Amino acid sequence: MVFIFTPIENLPERPSSVKVFIMLVEFFNLARTGLSPLQAIAWLAEKYSRPENTEQRIFIWTRDREQAGEVDAWLWSYSPVSFLPHALADFPEAEDEPILISPELNNINRADTLLLAFNPPASWTPDPGFRRVIELIPSQPGPELEAGRHRYRMLSKKYKLLHTTEI
View 1 (cartoon, rainbow, N blue to C red):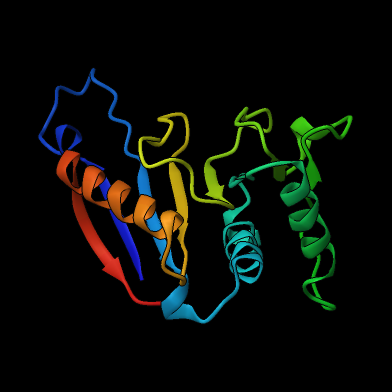
View 2: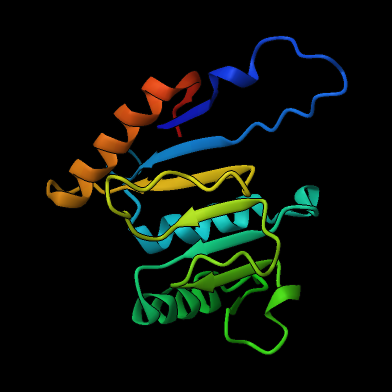
């Protein structure tokens, strides 16, 4: 299930001279998809980097360097018939990569989409520099699931829920 939010203050009509920035925040429920976190990351990265989304760049924010390495290895091997061009952030030409993986939230590849490979603390809020933020909601009970639920409640008070999509 994907929940998409947009700031309430962005919805009313504004003078044409005022730029409006809408950020989509999606919560991807792993329990409903049956996918592992790595499978979901690869599926979402492929979905948002398809040829029809040529302007889309993705930044995958990981918990630490070890998880960044796991995501990197998974993206290299996840499909025998397709290739997802990607790199770790310490790659010499990282700013040119359409998919970048890093434990540090620095959008050096100017990504439109932030894909969270872990659940950040409940107090974390999305960076308005991204047009889309995707958070994976874990399938197992525990602190990460509770943090995701807290963030969902917090964002739903601040933003308007636009729609829900079953995947």
